Amino acid sequence: MDLRDWQIKLKDKVLNSLKRGFLVALNSPTGSGKTLFSLVVGTELKGKVAYIVRTHNEYYPVYRESKRLEKSFSFLVSKALACPFSTADVNPEDIKCSSCDVFSSIPIKVDDYPFSFLSKLKKEGEEEGFCPYYSLLDSLSNSDVIVLTYPYFFIPRLREALGLDFSQYVVVVDEAHNLDRLNELEERKLNITIIDRAISQISNTTVIEMLRRLKEEVKKKALSEEKYILVQDYPKLTDDELEIIKEEYETLREKMIKEKRIKQIYLNNIIKFYETEGKVFSYKGSLVKKPITPEKYISILNDPSLSVILMSGTLQSKEFLRNVLGMTRQIEYIDTEKEMKKKLSGTIDCILALDVTSAYSLRTKEMWKKYASYILKIFYQAKGYVLAVFPSYSLMNEVMKLVNLPKLVEDEKTSLEDVYKLKEKSIIAAVARGKLSEGIELTKDGKSLISDVVLVGIPYPAVDDYLKLQAEEISKITGQDVKDLLINTTALIAVKQAIGRAIRSVNDRANVWLLDKRYDSIMWKTKINCLNPKKIKL
Ligand code: SF4
Image (cartoon, rainbow, N blue to C red):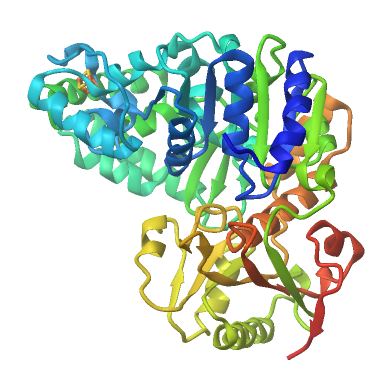
């Protein structure tokens, strides 16, 4: 196996750190070969690698590299995707397997790209009468390399249900800059649409009456603002009411499995909202319940019996891993570009605009017009797609309604597929920390098709009730004042992620437009490698 110079140089260092019980944090740019590297290290150390990814898009490179290394491979997806009788949007709990007549598994060998393999398996499962989900689950223990999404590793009850001994694996956590958002894994929402849909699925008049009353109360508490507002006195259900709702839910579950047509049962969204622990906030027309910090999910990484590699192209600092995420283990932090004293990623040319800002006090119609003019200019000089990243949906909508060009403006329903369907040069307007700004990969023959990345303002997170409570909670655990670290690191990672969308390999070159005068600081210029930007005004 031909390894790159950094992979050869750092392999022993990583192996030794893992042997000494250190957690390895590997910061290395996109396209530098982290996947192959971690598989080589993992299989050499323990023979088995559990690769933990954020989205299903990341299954493919792990499969490809496992095949190159001639290692057996398997993966798991949720029942919602693996069950031949369900639609993809169901909650896995909606599927009542104990009443299913094909509740059995067969031995399988994954010999095709994961999602091609899954469609064949589902078809065969339905025709031949076996369960694709349980067959995949059973195959995990016989494979050298397995891929799971974050919930299966970080949510304790799901991890335990796998029945795997993770101390037998090297656990590789990909896109580990997302660890600070693990508490979102069990975030629950309640809003008018969910309640209406639940009502439309049932005929029990007592439950319908109950839900109508709940709907009126939710309407009053769920505010439209795009920031988290703590709701102390949120609408409640009594234990008896919840029990009646659960009975109705069970009746629907039973009915759907009998008919072999399983759809999302919205009553479960309501049950889950009340059964999950966490604080309740109002956010963009919904009530949102979630734990304040990711501590409960992250603590597994401090288990000394596990060999762990955290990997990302935009990993937070060691200080952040310790003080915000609460890592107590010894950490070997490796920045591959620093270790190698050379760039392992592509090149960026920075342009900094000095006459615009997204600072709250200066958010005016005039400012939106200036931003729209910049986007217009950038679009006409761009050689490829233009990715414009905004701090919030509201700011994005204000600016983009003034931009009359081919464009795709992200909303909650936009998927990565919508981007891949774009035929002509367009502006892709995305919100920071969203699906697009952290997920799109537009390449052809290994080269990025995004020629320009526009940072419209600085994507600082809103200093809302959620962020304040989070900072307070973390300070209680670590004894550190982390509010500024939390705000600045969150913005920095969002900016680096956006830039990373255009730099997918060492041969890529992109323009990075920093449209906010606050980028003209040593901190920002150093951290994003734009030491000598060209400065411009409209
Ligand atoms: S096929 Fe049957 S056992 Fe398998 S996930 Fe679907 S309902 Fe459950």
